[in-house]
Image 1 (cartoon, rainbow, N blue to C red):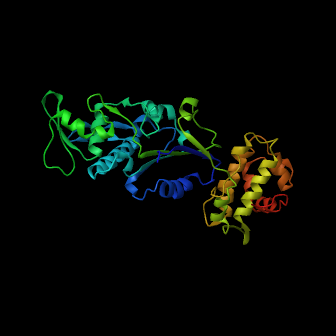
Image 2: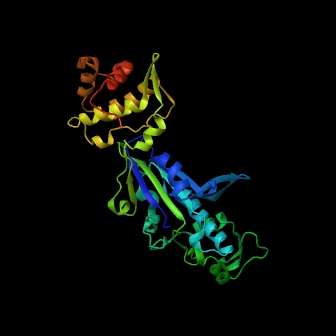
Image 3: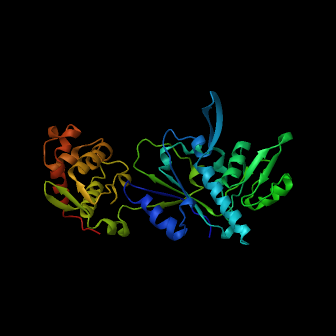
Length: 352
């Protein structure tokens, strides 16, 4: 099976991470071991060093020393390499090695071009699942990979190294002998070149409604498969069909409320820009009992700040109040119960 290299995108709460966790990883990739799942979350301060690796200073016996700490990508790559070595050791091919999933949540909240750096080139995959092109990395990064796959080594004279594979009693000093042992990884120790192996899948998610996101250029985007997660997928509704909103003792069905709310938002297409991104998913509030505080502090703030940020007319018309009564978010928060009741009273929408 070819590796998955996909970005799941859609409105907030549509179950993108849920689908990765509960369907793609266990059912499609058939990954069971937690060591074969590496996760990270991009954010504005996330860097290439966090992604691949970086030198971090620390004090030892009053002296400052620097240690190299591998990033999430290097850990995922090394785990995939390790699984290939285990497969080859047991008489299998690299295509039969245990799969590894590298999961990136909120991929558009970080500067992807800067974070991936030269790793971007590896995203081009050949039909056999390997990267079409390899890249050069630093000696520190190569040594970090060897350490992560369990190889023990020590420096010798003339910038040479002595290597020992996991479970073996004798060291290998002949560079060519050791290089031959890692050829199955397409790992070039002399020129420090790496490739993505076929057992490494990259899966990412992104919310299309985020306002403060980094631009993702076309060259980067075309190297991924894309899957849109619709707010109205039947299988999502099934997980929350018994979830309720409880406000002042009154209970409302959460799934019906979400359906009606999205219908209301879509009906205001003249007032709302990028309306596709302004709807919410069934997991927008992921609680068995949705309280008034959840409605106020999470849902209504999203409605106020993201959906109807430029035009509050749909809100005061829905609530049947004068516009002067809806000047601040605090005024909307006081209308939480009425807002839910008005949305639930929308009769034009037949639930899925």
